[in-house]
Image (cartoon, rainbow, N blue to C red; front, side):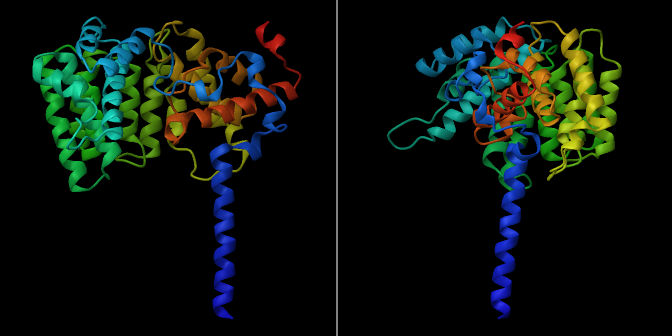
Length: 372
């Protein structure tokens, strides 16, 4: 009889856990004004789920063209040329370095190589071998190693540490080749998180970044991860860092949205209460991000990152019309937080998009009112 009671208890616990996880993942139960299938996102000209681009948060046609060329021909030279023509201090160079490194990493994962074929991402190895003094290739290689560590090894293991130490050396090589470029130091922020740099070591890297690009949004997001509670800092340190960045943000800078990213990094593991997303701390962070989006340049490469995160919070907070306004700008590309944390970013994004459309129409909205 005791065994029977234990089995029954395990079944009930498993049911409860599955319910909580499924609710947390989709957020449907607490935010749905009607069934999400009641409205059709296609009526708003939104891209079908299977056609959503998961590689980038927003459009960068030059990068897409070069990525397609490099992966089709396995010739790195177009990538090298694109990075040479990309401003060193800007956000776009950092995003392009990430994209090239991510492409090589995914190729290697899909084609690890064997007796009869070469491994994926071979173009990056050739790039480093044929152009060892090319600063762009050095930065892509350093970022590639960082991504490999996080994707293929478990933090704290010898394998993880070995790859991260190699990435650390690669960051140093890249920095020597491009003294004014903040990207090698931004990459090292991920190394700092992985290897557990001391606060003093971290701040030395951070000061080098501030000397080169003090308002770099990508750098601030990478630094925020170091300060988060799940790594080496605390919730209070992360919030303080984000709020300080927002306070000193120059006019038109998206740094004013940093507190929203800090809130996202510290969301409760399980939260079934809609009111949390309408709380003062979330509302304040959302308003800061909305202000940043309104004041930013339309061509700011980080604008899509902020808009995607706003979609998440606005849908959870049942602010349907505002969520739809953000979706109109970002739809088509989903390579950004929070979607990239899920195995299928397009599916996760599509769920929230459907919820936004359903909520918008349940409150009197339509394609005509959105367009006008």
